[in-house]
Length: 135
Length: 383
Image 1 (tube, chains in turn green, brown):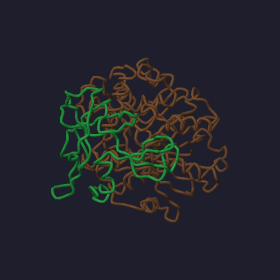
Image 2 (tube, rainbow over the protein chains, first blue to last red):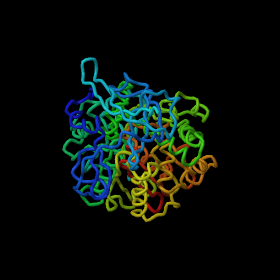
Image 3 (tube, chains in turn green, yellow):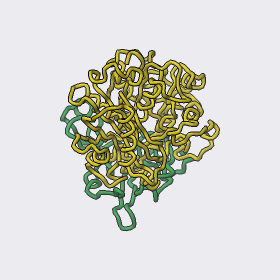
Image 4 (spheres, rainbow over the protein chains, first blue to last red):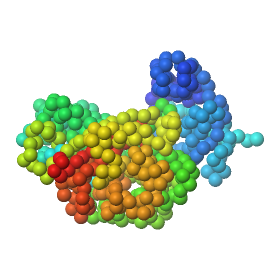
């Protein structure tokens, strides 16, 4: 049995995956990345939709050589740890750069790209990746 | 803890998940010499995927010839074994059961390599990481980078942990990889997610381990020397992504569960003679040691180099090879840890026997600290 991509799950999560939309707690400021009822830190119910900035700083990165069923076709691919201005951190795929070109501290920008495909006739998942800012 | 049992960790092409579970469980029941079992706790992470099975706890009870006995499957990823032990300890402590059997098993060798990656990735939050192809190897690599940069330590300080595990596993009959692997071999193995290399990871495997818990009242004094006391068990949770935590290098679920298990046991950290810790990746060993307060931050690699964690050292770790070399069959891993502690504390550890082991701790975790647990075992007269 191979758990593939569930279209409904991706549809539910599209605002995060296409636009980096999160829920910020109006009480304590914590960012909650997925739909939820209470803030994970203070349990306040005052959660406000917000889009994270499109730029972030690269803290660390790696290259995944061997991946899951639906991602393996894209391997090897780059994965980075990114930090936004407010201190929120996410892990995302990196693109439009070779491993050798990347440096910690680089400024990166969000783009929407193909993330995975569930077989030849299956669902294609798009979502955010980050690429170096070309100045 | 009155008895333990386990299979060799290997690729058991000819055996099913429940066959392996039964082999370990029946061995533990024989070892404990108990006449009956009041409750079964089956620790397993991925039976639905590896073995097409839900409701598997009833099948386990049937294969043990124990149909009729309450049987529950506990799933907490790589820490399923510790979570099952936590439940069984509660059942015996509360009087719900006098004899509880805890058995963990996993069957990962039937999976293709990408399927194994899919299953392992399920230990990470899917909606924010799994969907994007962020794998456990990627998370381990990122933590590794942050660790080396913050503490200004060379890679060999981290990569020597797998070499230690292989030294300890050498000649251990139940270990998946019972042979030495040198630091140079670790550092020259192919990168899987740089800086992380192949020999800094565990490998897909099958295995099962079991322990029998008996209430203090019913164990009596009759079997002194063959029993150990499960003095304290604790389980804690944290945010699923290490990078959502205040400090990604501090596994607070490890810190809190270790602290609580010690408190419940009434012993101090320095009194522990042996530690079995969760080294699913090389970097996890220093993170666990430092989060739990066994080493100062950034210093565990230096302490290993100085011999502190060797079999003859002040605090031996992973005396049969740990997850790296004995093997990491997810749901069974924590039960191998506690079974191995039991062997050490009852003088049955063979060539790996420590001189003066009176108390030991096992630390298990999943999702890089999303859920962790710790158990303290006390042997000898104090048991």
